[in-house]
Image (cartoon, helix red, strand yellow):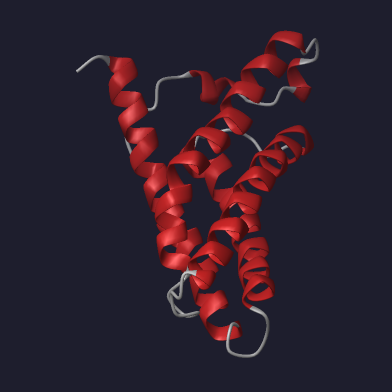
Amino acid sequence: MKAAMKKRLAEFVRFGVVGVVATAIHYGLYYLLQSHMNATVAYSIGYAVSFVLNYVLSSLFTFRVQLSAGKAVAFLGGHAVNYVVGVALLNIMLLAGVPRQWAPLPVFVMVVPINFLVVRFALVKVRSANNKLNDNPNDSMCNEADNHNHSGV
């Protein structure tokens, strides 16, 4: 297996681990809150909490990049798309008669592929673009270790 393909596979596995954790937190909060408030509000609260954890873990563990304001904004922008799609699908599920407590589950299945592409672009592509434009190596969006091939998960 080529080194680049191996790196992508390891990155995707790490993405899966972070995704499972973030989704479990999102769904857990939704499940606890949905019987006490509007389903969309419960979904939004779960999303917001899992978003913060997802950003930190996706940056440091999945894509192995440093946290920065620029990447956080790109990540937020990407997740805004994912959030809007998720809320729309949640409401479609509810209108279709899927019980409130289970409605987010098919939504998660549908938004995960979108999320991977958006998150990867936000964290990795922004890092690459900013590194090319950045004159100050101490203010770089990634450090020297990020430029090495990470073969482990």
